[in-house]
Length: 316
Picture (cartoon, rainbow, N blue to C red):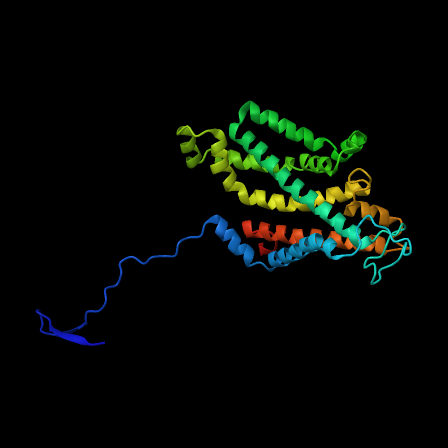
């Protein structure tokens, strides 16, 4: 770098000064901060469990949708020459006592269980979001009444209630079972949403919207629910697992899906008695159920850790 010689006026001492160069900016611009949603997505995509679960559930969904179209047998057809047959090249998962193909039945049962889980899980979360946010925002008498209803539903044994009501709904389809599962799966999350809403309603942006005359549904939809959306997404994801397990358990005991409909629960119920003599009738539906629940659970755990970095494996 070139230097300029200057004479000090006081003592005549030469002073070296740097040559003029490009001006240095006074303000250094920093990167734009990430929003909460983008930050959660960034953490999520950096988690191997999320990708493992997402890829696994994508493969399972494609298998459940395309599998029956590429297989020569259907769930109701019978092969009288191969009744009670083990897995072969002709029947990949074997057949049951009346010659029905277990592979085709497993795919149909997987479709039904996934549909029930995908509807009942988010539906229960939606009910929790509406009831919890309304109770927490309004407070007073409305809050006390809704909390009383939540506590009442929590102490009611849903399984026993379904056993009592099941004879009245024999003619109805699986839609009733889906609504029933969703109707008894939202209470705990509603309490969480209520407590979060009570803390958010005193924030300045909520007060400003209220003073400006913004109606309550708009405040809940634009200011309250988006701030707890991450919790609702986690609950909906894990609710899919809980709903599939609930449907499987109820169908296993004969209170859910019934013949001629097929689900993983009905297949497990039929295969339990032959688990020792003909294990393929139980092992294959159970394996498909475990893989499906495990894949969805991986996504739910990754979502939880992305929202709260201090939870789970990130705690250390």
